Amino acid sequence: MTEDLTIGEQIVLLALDEEAGTLREAPLRVSLAVSAAALLELSFSGHLTERDGALVVAGASTPADPAAVAMAEHMQSHPEETPREWLLAVREQALDTAYKGLSGKRLVREHGRRVLGAFGSVKYPVTNLSELGALRGRLVAVLTQGQDPDERTAALIAVLHHAGLQAVLLQGSGAEAPEGRLTAIAEGQGTAAELGDAIRTTVAALTAVIASSAL
Image (cartoon, rainbow, N blue to C red; front, top):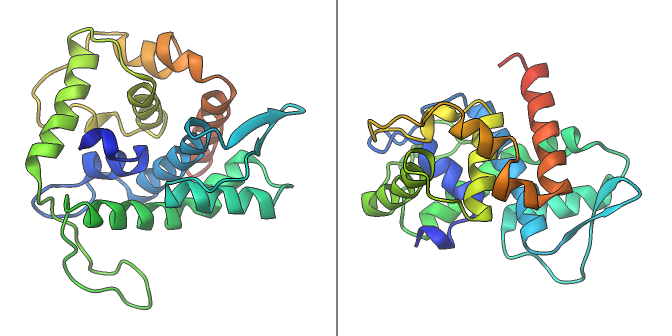
């Protein structure tokens, strides 16, 4: 089933403390990473193109990922904004969508209640540890055993790296990536490089907003 998860859902699943149901890392970092993932989902689904040096929404169909839909709608209604502003504007909605997606796929259980739509004391303990284990196993194979990543796994690694969330990549595995392996994938060498303008723009925007937020 991990192949059926959006990149944003994978980020949240990796970032969750599986028992406590809370994020291991700063929520702002996680939400920005999920927002960046929504931008990449537009590219993967063919709804993003480069025009006059900028990324624009393309195609008449609706993306399957609700977070990508939110990103596309924001980009179309605010064409004057920069990619950095896109990530900031959509981050909360993208994170909420990822939680709902994981809950709908029965990978997490929503516990608690929201106040005026906010997360408040809501927690999301993981209910399907086998799927989390499969996702972690895929990352271990790529980062420590030399397996070539597919483009979605390369994008996942790149987003987590540039969001400063490297700690969740090998969480609980006891493994360590060889020096340079993570950087080689995250900096666009090999598979990630083939993603072109979308990954470069997304990574640049993510790095800039993380730096300006002093996280």
